[in-house]
Structure formats: structure tokens, C-alpha cells
Image 1 (tube, helix red, strand yellow):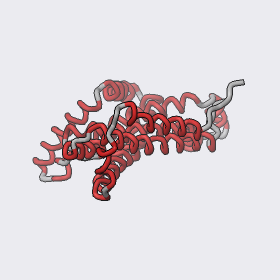
Image 2 (cartoon, rainbow, N blue to C red):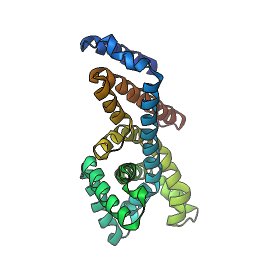
Image 3 (cartoon, rainbow, N blue to C red):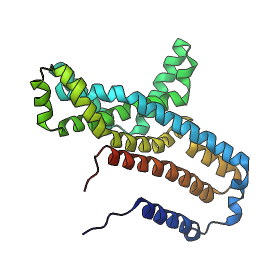
Length: 254
């Protein structure tokens, strides 16, 4: 019988690897001195807040968009279904960096024309790009969750005299969201890392602040190592949350 690996064993193994990395790359202890300052951690903490804020806004705003994409592809009329298929597959095929850069140019021009300064800010383009991309990805996750439900759920709803809309709203979608919730959290962890792409358009998030820091302190290896640990801790916590939800929702395998 195959034994299941415990979460603390995985965490301990990763911690051991993180301890060995400075030795393997011969990082100098003196170059970690900037991280003994409160100002350094305050600087990085602000970047982490911006990273989590942009990710949270994008993931929450993407849920209605994902629902629209999923329902349109699953049961929409042909005049709606086929354009949505093109849009979803097109967005998923585009490089996220290119989408982010394009939206930055378009939103900046629109913001200047309309006198809306918020649209000219880099974070607006970052959030918009993550919103569109995540909506397309989560739409497919939600559609897959709908398709994974047993046919008997539809038949039971119809036997109660529910219309298609009532069946979807009261029976199918609640179960589909229940199944799609862990992937949604996993996508949030992906967004946390994808915000770093915003550095190319001037979004000063966690990774970019690490770059600014090591350019002044001349310790790139040490700074990026610390920033990577921050990313790991955030994503590990999100991964554990997804695992707990899977167990509580009865979606665990094996």
C-alpha cells in the first residue's frame, strides 16, 4: 500500500532545500545584512500587499466573467457560444505579458482622453489583464465542473419541475462551484506569481521591489533568495488552504 505524504513532511523537505541553497550558491552572510533593517521589510511588505491586492481583485472580479464564459460555452445559443469560444481560447493562447502590455497602452490612452488618472496607472492594466486571463481560465474550470456532475443531477432537477434556469441556479451551479473552489484557489496562487510580470510596465510589486533593493545593495542572489522565500510561504499557505477545502468539501482522491 502506498503511504500518503504528510503536509509537514513536504514543508520540512522544502525548508531543508531552502537552507542548502545559500550554501550551494555560496551566498555571503554579510550580504544578508540589509534584511536586518526594519525599513527593508517595510519596503518589501508594501510590495507584498500590492501583489496580494491585485491578485485578490482579479480573482474575485473574474468569477462573474468565468460564470458567463462557462454558461455561454455550455448551453448558450450558437450566436453567443462560438464568439465566446474564440474569445476564451484567444485569451488563453495569448502571452499574459503581451496582454498586460497591450492593455496598459490602451487604458493609458483612454484614461488621458477621458481625464481618468486611475486608468493610466500600471496597476489598472495589471488587474485588467489578470482579470481577463483568469476569467478565461476559471471559466474552463467551472465548465469542466459542470460537465463532471452526474447526469442524474439534471434528471432529478427536471423531475421536480424545475426549468433549465432554475436547475442551473439551484442545483447545478452550487455543486459546480463546490468542485471548482480548490482550482480557483490554486489559480489565485498562480496570480500571485503572475503579478511580477507587471514590472515591465512599472507596477512596483514584490518582485520589482526586490530588484530595486538589490540594485542599491548589490546583493542580487541574496535578495532574490529572500523574495523567493516570501513567494513560497504565500503559495504554500494557499496550497494548504486548497487542500483543506478539498477535504472538507469531500473532494479528496483516494
